[in-house]
Structure formats: C-alpha cells, structure tokens
Length: 590
Image 1 (cartoon, rainbow, N blue to C red):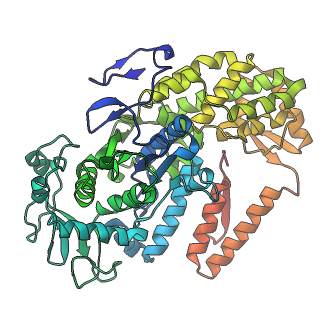
Image 2 (image 1 turned 180 degrees about the horizontal axis):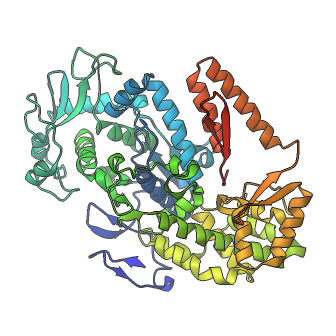
Image 3 (image 1 turned 120 degrees about the horizontal axis):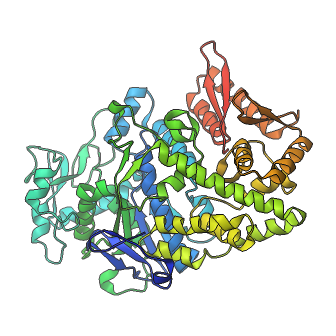
C-alpha cells in the first residue's frame, strides 16, 4: 500500500512501479511528497528530536525512534555509511526533570543518568541502531547523541546573536524571542509556515504562557532565571542572576553545532545553503510550537532562509482506541512491554518493532494487544519456516548458516528497498516479505531474501540465524534465546503446530545433549531448564544479584539500579520480596 502525496488516500501498487525511483519523502513544509535531494550527497545530515529523560519512555516515544532509525538505515544504504550523519538529542534540563527529581529525592544528575541508561537499554532491545554500532574509531562520528546540558555555550551564543539583531529582548531576567521582529526582518521565513497557520490561529490554539513581561503573547522564552535548587548557568544579555534555557533553543544549538559548525569547510554547496541541513524529524505534536520556534531561532540567528530542507513528522499513537493516559490506566512504557505482564506481555523487541512498522509512519496508529499478538504470530511463522528449512538442509547445516550470515552483509532486495524509498512505505515492505513466507521452508533463495529484508528493518542481527539453528547442531545454544528474541518454547510450539516432526526431534536430541530439560505443564506449555551446574550465564546473574544486594546494604541506590538494569538487559527481572529476599523472573528474548 502506498500513500498518495496529494490526498493521503492509499493506492495499490506493486514493487515494479517504485523499484527504480529515488527516495521520496513527505515534507511537512511543502505539504507534498518531495524528491529527496541532499545539499551535499557526500554529507547527508539529519536531526531528530529525542527524549526528555525524566521517566521511562512510553510506547508513543518509541514510534519516532523506530521510524527515523529506519530512515537512517535507508539513507546509509543509498549514500554510504560514511556519508550520513544522524543527530538525536537528549533533553536533560527541563521543568519535568526538576519536578521528578524533587519528588524522588534524588539529584537531577542522578535522575537523568539513570533514565538515559534505561532508555538506551529499552531502544536497543527494539533493534534501534546505537552510536557504538555506527561510529568507527578514528573517523568523524556519524551518529551523535548530544545532551542539552553539554551545549549551554552554544545556546548562549545563539541567544546573544538574536539580542544583537533586535530579534530577542531582555525582560525581568528572561530573554524572549520577538515574533513581530522576525516578521520585519527581510529574508526570513514566515512564522507559522511549517504549521500552516496564521498568527491568530496559532494564538487561539496554542498553550501560550501569559506573562506581563512579554511584548506580545506569541513571544516565547529563550532563557529564564533559575529558582532555588534548580540548575543554573551564567545568563546571556547582561542578566545578573543565573538561569537556564527555554525548551526550544536547545535543538537549534545542538543541530547548529553538529550539523552546521561541525561541517564548516566540508560541505560542497551554494553559500545560501551553508547554514541549512537536510532533514529535521520528530513527532507530529512537535510541529507547533517546538519546531516552528526552532526555525525562527535558527534562521534569525544564522541569517538562513531555512533551518532544514525536509521536515518529517510521524503520526499520533493511541492505545486500544483511546488517548494514552495514566488516568485511564492505559499508559504503557517500552519497558512495560519488554519485561512485564502488562499489556499482555512480555513481548520481544522485534515483535514491538514489527507491530510499529506495520502502519505507515504518517498515519495514526492504534496500539493494541491484538496488533502485538498478530506481529508475534507472523514472526513465529517466519522462525518456524527457517527452522523447517534448516531441517531439510540438516546435512549441510554449516553451509546454510554461512549463506544466511553472508546475506546479512548484502544490500536489501531491490523490490523491498523500493517500497521504503517511497516515503518509508514500511507496510508495503512488510507485505513484500509476507509474500515470500510461504516459499521459505523449501526455497533457500527466498529465505535469504527474507533474512536480508528483516536485517535491514532491524529485526534480526548476525547472531539471530545462529541462535535458531543451534538446536540442529550449529553454533552455541541458549535455552532462553531464539529468533526474534522468542524463547525456544515459542519456536518449539510453532514447529509443533506446523507438524514439523524432523525439527522437533532434532531439537529434542540437541537439547538433551546440552543437558537442557524440556518441561510441559498441565496446559501443554513447554519450558526449558538447564541441568548443567556450570552455566556461565547463570553464574553471572548470581554474581550481579549478590553485588546488587551489597549496594543496597550500603544504600548506594544508583549502583543498585544500574545492576538491576544490567540484569534486565540479560533477561533477569529482579523483584524484591516483602521478606527482604529477591525473586528473579526470566524473560524471553534476552
């Protein structure tokens, strides 16, 4: 299914009519699907708004992370890994952070460090590329994750420029941006062009802070004085008291430093484009006021006609047909889905990612248990088909594995990539994969194409085929690891339902050799238990549990939380019992 550029109506199309076309992206600024033409193909630059680290990221936060991770992969495929730079920020100074730290009785630094670490663990489980997977030692970084507090100097610099140009003014220890002054400055874009609204419409529909020191209700804060016990820095504009930045200025500063200043002298472009980068992305809720204000700040401070050429926004997410809200009891975090029984879980990371990509990124998405269950069933079917293929090629297992691993290093299939080049048409790409599933169990070429496609979408890694094939005598086997992060019990049941006796029998024999016991409960559900006494993974878990207990005894809560997060990343969810003991719940997919 494709999305028409003019009216958003879906139209049917096969891969043939998009296979040979270049990348096209729906641009919020132009309200059309535009051909993507980077300013400099050797230096493609993209910025995406990241999380505010005051609490665990919810599933709505996961959508832009997954969507623009997919775009990053497409750009790297088209222009080369060394030619694409991606900046995704972390907001670590904010009113919500201050309030949450006070509520928990911890320092702001401790709160943001722990929350950022948990965020990274969560999105890594979703198959999102991370800086340590992308950046190469000795080369310029291609994935940068800057923090707001590390860019105060750049923020003050931009604010100083705006004051010097009479675009910003000082009032009662605040610095405010004057929307009217922007309108009088020649060569600047119209304030409201991105949101496609007039000033009156924006004022009527916005959550505008009313303050006596504002010259105009639409003016917004660039800098404000810090209250007692709030973080503060020397203020710009001759203000005597310490202060902190407003929300919008941080993204202007971070994109400027890493995508403009960082490329000074390296970009081959027209001088008018020197202070412009290619893509700015985020959720649809950020169009106004956040992105509108970013454009205003950056363009006026840098004398640029635009901040970015392409503006991409993902649609809203609701839960079971309703807006997600703690008051409705339907608020769900990424971690809830990965590690708890909430919302029908725990769900493996690839299941969550597949379920998210089934809907086109610009369309609203209804996040339901049925959606997740359907995604899990489809991925289990693929895992079962590959398992059946392994069974048929049992005698040449090693050759099969080498072929699959080699496939992961190849380009994605052209028809599949063609869908993604048409405004990230992930539903079309997934539909193309579905068309091959029926052939996979007996067709090595089809299986290879599926593996390459799923690898490109971030659903499998180089280790995944080994993990699935291990019960057939290839590679190492962990009883709680399987393809797409499923426990082996899930794959066992899928093989049983598919009637694949050879796979079941060969798996049983290998498990017995590895001293893995198969246990079946009264409901027929299969689980696995290691009979080995020297399980290194179990020894590591035991050591970490002991270290956490020691940290808790010392009241080193930050260290205890860090160890708990490390255990969770290994699939061991630690729960403290009322009697002072500890229980461990093993979660599939770790």
